[in-house]
Length: 211
Image (cartoon, rainbow, N blue to C red; front, side, top):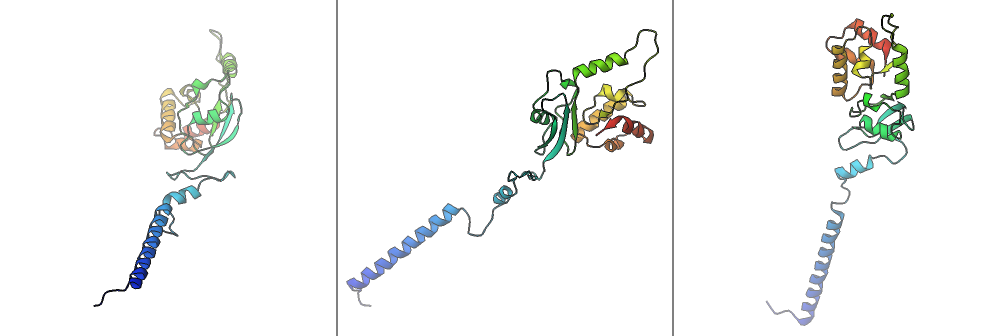
């Protein structure tokens, strides 16, 4: 085979340089994109499902959705709030501007997990004191009728549940423990799952409790 002429060597060399430049640019382009064109990653899908600020539900990486709760009672700014899935009562309390100086926050389980549609009522110390005074009796006098004001199933304490007719301290403790295990309750009917609570007890609970 004869040797290549000078002009042929120059042409072949130029072609090789062009091929090298094209290959290098293609490699850099692939690295910058991080994935082939047209391929959508899982993280991109998650990002596109996030809220756009128009008030729609958002989806987190664990598949949960936002919860909407009603915060009432002794808080700075009572109202209905949307919070991320997995939020606690304390988070809702902070969204409502925090408890007032007269709030009786120790009667509320602030670590309980929120459920959609739950109402959180923060009691007021002054109102509680009035209720105790109205329900107190002098020594030797007949006891007054128990208060019939509805109690929130999401925030009721053992003491408050114990005031319901037919509910003793043991059952009241079971209700609170069951609520904590469920991460909160949005309906009184959920208490029917507790062992030892029959139809008669459920009727008493429905008449004295609210969501």
